[in-house]
Image (cartoon, rainbow, N blue to C red; front, side):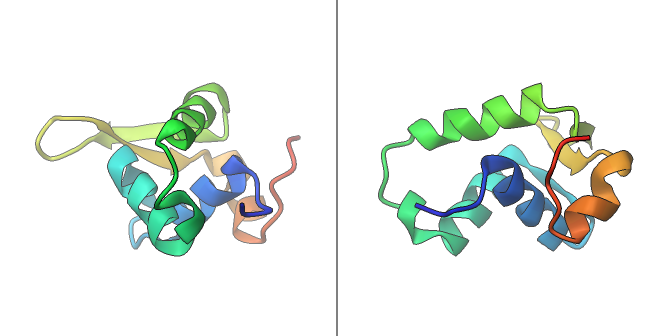
Length: 91
């Protein structure tokens, strides 16, 4: 299991995207692609991803997807600089 928190995993996924925003399905895919631990696991870890996105103010919705299904998720501007440096501590 990765040593990083879900906040760190989600943030790294979002920051790796060219537009600095991802759909939920793209966040799942990035985590599975970069951490094989999650690939063959039962899907309960996805609940943790959704929980972290919705409950942590460091993540914000950034518009709807082109097909209107789902929202893009981004990092709150107040957290962007710290997260880009790998600092995921809450302020």
